[in-house]
Amino acid sequence: MKQDDTRYIFVTGGVVSSLGKGIIAASLGKLLQARGYKVTIQKFDPYINIDPGTLNPYEHGECYVTDDGCETDLDLGHYERFLNVQTSRNNNVTTGRIYQTVIRKERRGDYLGKTVQVIPHITDEIKRCVKSLGEKEHYDFVITEIGGVVGDIEALPFIEAVRQLKWEMGRRCAVVHLTYVPFIKAAKEYKTKPTQHSVKQLQESGIQPDILVLRTEHHLEEDMLQKVALFCNVAPDAVIQSIDMPTIYEIPPLLLSQGMDSTLLKKMGVEPGPDPELKPWRSFVDRMKRATEEVHIALVGKYVSLQDAYKSIDEALLQSAIYNDRKLKLLLVQSENLKEKDLEKKLGHCDGIVVAPGFGSRGVEGKLLALRYAREKGIPTLGICLGMQCMAIEYARNVLGYKDANTAEIDANTAHKVIDLMDNQKNVTDLGGSMRLGGYPCRLKKNSKLEQAYGKELIRERHRHRYEFNSAFLDEFEQHGFHAVGINPDNGLIEALELDGHPWYIGVQYHPEYKSTVLNPSPLFMSFIQAAIAHQAKTNK
Ligand code: GLN
Image 1 (cartoon, protein in one colour):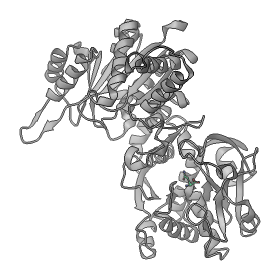
Image 2: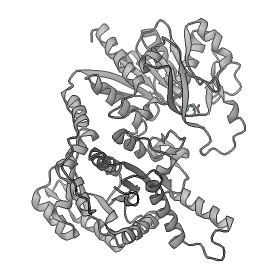
Image 3: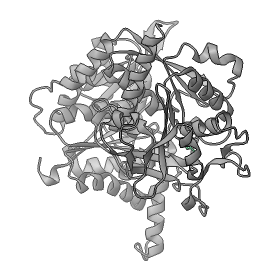
């Protein structure tokens, strides 16, 4: 397509939240990409925080980190995993960011003489963010997901901006609206009324959706789809149903089979051509369905009761299990209540253990117990960020004999701070966006398991932390066989530890899960799952 031909697709939601708008947006992006278009996806979040970095997982699930060091919504993780392209800070915009920019401009005098208002100043800034993403790198399609539900007070300026863009650009803009069709058990009936209401609400804001995606637990009959089309003023082929699927990876083929992308392209004045084969994607899904043998992985963390708290880790494990022809059996182990006497029962049957990232002291003692058990029993173990820091603490306490070893995050006064605050964090006062964030290079030690896993010496992975391994203790660790096998070549920070004489015991200060995608699984997770499978074979389970 020509330079000025970028097309903009908006994904809005109705009825209730948590319907999976991010997955629908990512799946649509995947289908357009498979047709040969250059696609990116962005998320607009209507809350006032500048970014989700200061929210805890109870509020917002996982915080996803981009390579350029932005803490973002977890939907960006779906976008990267589906499209296999990197996103950046420009792909996640919040109300807070919009207002911050507008207020800065006001102080600078950019609007001199004018009253600054939601319309046009806030809406103009939203429109600028939508368009600048498409223009900067020249994308054929920019998909913009609007967080929350249509009708939310805080989403109003975003919806108004979408209306204006549609008015300005005509067919170059389209709106996909995702709604929910509940099944009333007692009446044994599906109800389309909530969908009709939410479309009405959108229409009251001046927006006629182009495509409706109905989330449903069971198959909806044709006459019901026709009824929705008639009442909601959309073409019959523009009503798509998205039934609950065993995994999110089955959704792109599901939408393709109903012609969602071709219908949308036609609406936008683009000749769709033949349907894409989606070959590599389908072969991944087939492999997933064929896998019957299980690999049992325990994830030890304090947020295990929350579905989305460790999203990228869950997905990275799943992808690597599938590429090793295994069905992932993920066992969530709450670190907060973990007791010595439960270890055998909870972890003894596992093929591998992941110790999760985190902040603060809650659940750390449980992580330390799990790590001691895994280290002594020879169970393959991956420690991520705080998980790696816990590996160092456990080792210092139980092997080096420093019973008071800790991280300065929990005990700033201990004589054995094996994990300490990074120098450049010492003067940090504002907590938002001030951690060590984003992609950094890391040099791997030749012939280490880590180097073998990646198949190269220089890698780049993403970070989100304030504390680091205290290199004053490195000699002692190394003498006992716990080696630094990953070092930042620019500043010497220790990024990875690997234990001698153990089948697979590796801790990484970085987050390998952020870079694991469907078509490009993380080499570290691949190696971990292979070690888990080997452990399973050895223990004859
Ligand atoms: N709380 C630790 C730090 O800030 C670890 C962070 C994490 O696990 N993401 O260094």
